[in-house]
Length: 219
Ligand SMILES: [Mn+2]
Image (tube, rainbow, N blue to C red; front, side, top):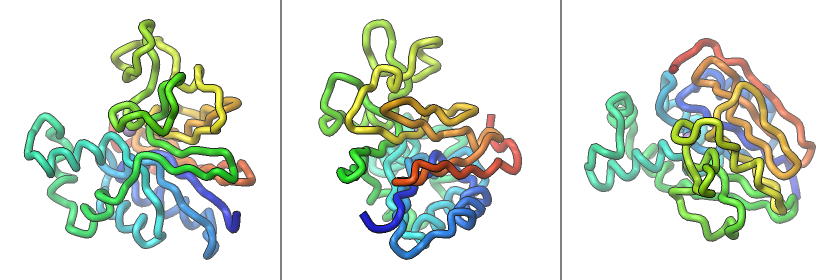
């Protein structure tokens, strides 16, 4: 593998923190950037985040927020979008939509035995076979073994607590105050839009770089 593989957690419109993190990373020509989804909504400027992603030729994975925007665009059905997200929808231009349309569910780096995904995986099923509804949304696993949002099953354990690879999984979506590193996974959504920090995980060196949020943009 030439260069570094750099994953960045949920940016959610926080373009200033994203730009600062990109500077701190001092990207080289053969480095590859993987954004773990949810580039949009909540923070100050979603279009600027997508523009930066394009400029840096980042590969982006589909988050639940992009998935809902795309579904709303295809169907016009308001159930897919929240009132607060209509501003993002109105802001995006053709090239932004093209970028969102190009986002994939997972990215695998076989040389590192590592898979990147927005939400995570349900243990016990081959990761390649899991649908968008699971891999973009899973946070915890309830008593019946079903994938759930944290708010729908308070106190339930993270899917990652049950995940024993290979592969090693790098994911976002479950926002936490700190990085959540286990033997077979690392969660790097460190709540930037809620005043936490934006985290990058650098492979193969297994190093983290973090930028503090300038303020709390969403609660
Ligand atoms: Mn998410």
